[in-house]
Length: 164
Image (tube, rainbow, N blue to C red; front, side, top):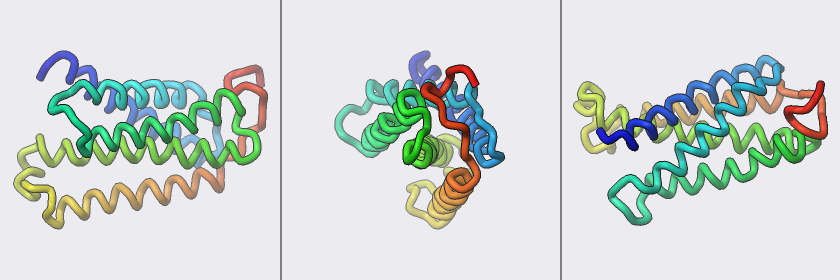
């Protein structure tokens, strides 16, 4: 594996892990500023660094990258510009959760391609184990996203990382 792809994979794993910490913190009603910054930064970098990886052209991985960047283009200003005020709170939670889900979706795809045990269960990724895994991941993020929208109500401030 090239160094570039290794960096891309590490960014992706950090993005997923920090995103899950941030999401669970929001479900607990806490404002996870550092975890959120790590999640957003590494997820943007994951999406951007996916584009120069061959094969080239508009393929499913690049479409997922574009969708992720669109979600992040809403999430980042919702947090850093609008400070989660009004509808920006739920817009941030929904778009950040979708970006996290998309990163996890690709992680499941890559796991079924690269891990021999999983690859044997679904070599073409059209078999039931792959569909069940992807369905479970989607359901998990829907539930977590709904819980976060219901439970995360931070104080509104002009800038997300300003004084409390």
